[in-house]
Length: 308
Image (cartoon, rainbow, N blue to C red; front, side):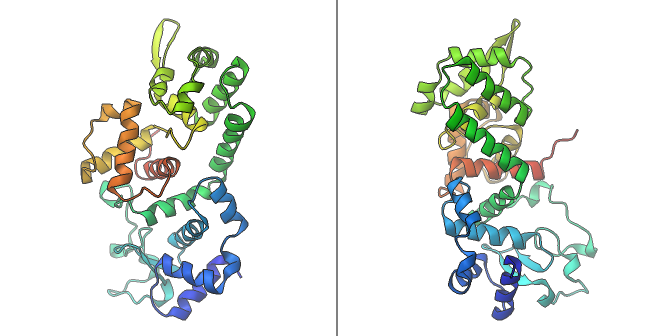
């Protein structure tokens, strides 16, 4: 029996809406083979989830959130899940009129989740759902696994130009950071003797790596520098990019979770402080910096897509 069918059976037996947490408890009790699977263990080991229970909960959120067999009521936290066939909607509406937010649309039209007002207030369940989405993006997860192998096992130090150049080139290719002179950047990192800064968690090293002169012109590769440090120490350094910036600014303007200016995001020590205030304000301390980064990046891509 598939995981989705298990959830359907549980909801059918319950004859009432259930939260993902309630479904998780039933699975652990009555279907233990679906708790602590190899996939769960692998993703916990990668740091995507705090523990096996988190991994199971994320799977429930992810597989019910976009499946037409389920109705997800997100007006309450945690959301409640029902079988779509059992929902009796008024005004002649049916399950085909339910949008991705789990709420009915007027006149059967799709809602636009890209509207600012549709970006929900962050909460642990929401983060888990986004982490599960990330886990299903094979191109990104394999890319990160490859970079993890390079940065942490094959070339963990920054004392040989060959190693640094290889890491700079890989990041530049995977992330399209538009560095056209990778050798000069690699030499700059080598000469900056960054290993001691990384080991000590010194945030100033990010801005030091970012600022470089190439052919007489000063460049600021800030996003690249944050990625380079994060792939060495993801538990200490998180990644800055335009998607993360847009989501943080959105929540600052709407919830005022912390007072900061847009320019503060480009000063790495302040950027980290903003991320930590974001965690504290929304009660997300159980998640790592890397997990918060994944949420912010995915939400940014979804709600604030770039126009090419």
